[in-house]
Length: 189
View 1: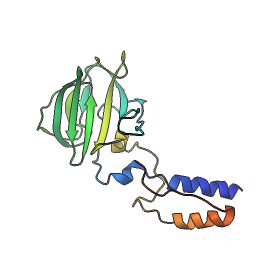
View 2 (view 1 turned 90 degrees about the vertical axis):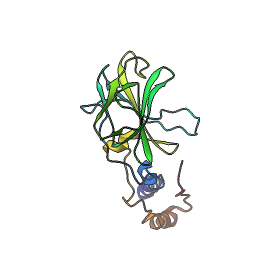
View 3 (view 1 turned 90 degrees about the horizontal axis):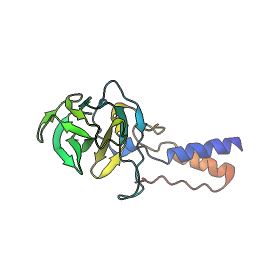
């Protein structure tokens, strides 16, 4: 019975793809606040496009602290949205967002990973009365965990090439031991 439980646990973990599987070209990133800040609220992807969730992470900082580009790219937005300073940088297929910030760069500027791009604002902070940076990562219209950029994303248990090698053998073994086993190997959005 213990073998069956271990096998089913392994199968359930193998059936759920990590976010990095679906984004083949994530840039090499760096923390937007230094030293590496405390994450006061993690990434909570929404179940649907308009569903509840937390589409980024909140990083604890202090008002006026330099905000740095999480990866090299081109500034595509630097301005105010709903009274909050927002900055967006394109990284050839992915985009990072930073708020609330007062921008030190302009649309069209090319930035290096780690380059100061603005200053953290206290007003409109997700953590008010503390200051924190809301840092987001998008691929197309899909939100991803920005901690993937700094090697802090979700635990990955699949082979690095994203294959499902060996899963069929495990399903067959589980069926031989315990009967019917349903495994969904499809992508989850």
